[in-house]
Length: 213
Image (cartoon, rainbow, N blue to C red):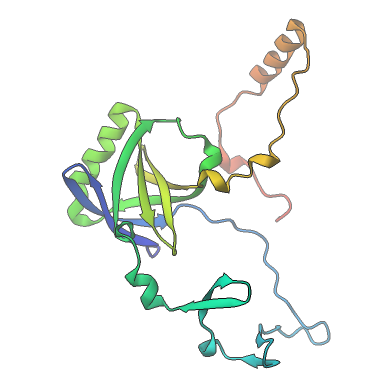
């Protein structure tokens, strides 16, 4: 079993139950190592201090936030833990929306939501309620030093969670509006006929990464 990336509670009204999140997918690209052309030995990454003009050890490195040009405030992991919001350990359901109401362009990363052993009944009840009403749930979740808006949806096996992009993270300026070109009713019927011939159940196993192979 994969290690969970987050553990905490889902709170829904007066009900709260423990869950854990595990990554639902991860890209699997072709990976190359950096090698020395002369002898094909692995190249080691070196952290370098530009001010002192010398390499530094990882133990000498701290996190820093640039507060002004060239000025930094350092922070450590303990400080980040102290300022973590309540959503670091608890997801409060903020609202529900109709299934399919959220444009998939907002979807960032997907996770499986599994119940802890003592949460079986509450988890099943929440899952059944979403299925019966045709709703998805919207909540907030703090993870990886960031607070996410998330969508929780039911599938036949349990709950799936998607972190969502914030509106300012969408590159709307890159979107090109479709031109209002004219077409005939015959051309539309032909296009619809072609789509009908291409219609088939989605079977992801039939698609392969030819570049990787």
